Every structure is written in C-alpha cells, then in structure tokens.
Length: 149
Image 1 (cartoon, helix red, strand yellow):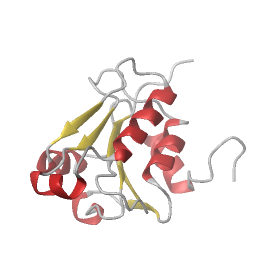
Image 2 (cartoon, rainbow, N blue to C red):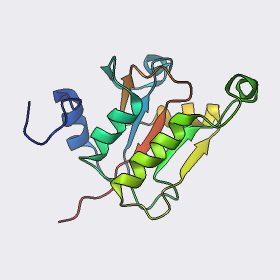
Image 3 (cartoon, rainbow, N blue to C red):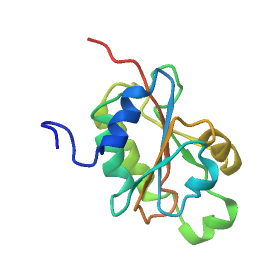
C-alpha cells in the first residue's frame, strides 16, 4: 500500500504505468474480453473490480493523450447485440463521467472502434488490464498523455 494511491493499483500495474511513454496504450477490459488471445504482453488481472473504478484509479495517475481526437475509445456495438442491449451501454456513460472528472481533455467524448479494429489496437497495447466487469461492452482503450509540472 502507498499513501494517496488507490489499492486497485497493483505493483504490476504501477510498474506498467511508469514504464509507458506518451501515446502508449492501456486497455481496461471486461471479464468477457479475450485478453490472453489478443495481448502481446502479460495481462494484469483485477478480478472482482469494475472497469470504471479501474479506469478512475488509472486516470488518477496518468492523463489521456490530448493529441488523440477522443480521450478514450470503446468497442462499437455489434449489430447482433443491438437487440440484446436495446440502447447505448450505460457503462459508456460511466466511462465518459470518469474521463470528464479527470478533466484534461476538452472534448471528453468517447470514440468508437469497430470490433475487429478494436482487437487490432489491443494487439499494440502496452498493457491490458482485465477486470471483473460483467457489463457488456465494458472495454476502454486509453492512450497515455504527457505529465506536466
């Protein structure tokens, strides 16, 4: 435990966040995400934790890259899932709130990647954090921004 750092930030995760450079990608994945299949690196597991709380903890230590059009990216809803969901996933609104609370990105809108494009991006991620998130489409890609004094 460290003062002022969320207990959700494990030693492995804090190392990864410190080792990441500007523009490197972190994926916060839900429990259903094929993280082991897609990640080129070890997957950090935080079972039992929500993706939104992990995102909040991560964003307390790094900010999103302002050079990207959007502060974060989610996986676009597959047409076959639209009937199942019936509407925009509520978790996306929570991700937006977490990013808005972080405050460094003026647009604060989530971007969307098609499923296969999302998977392609994940293969280039510096780190994938698989949470215990059970809500569908609870995956978020963030690009690390610069830290200023």
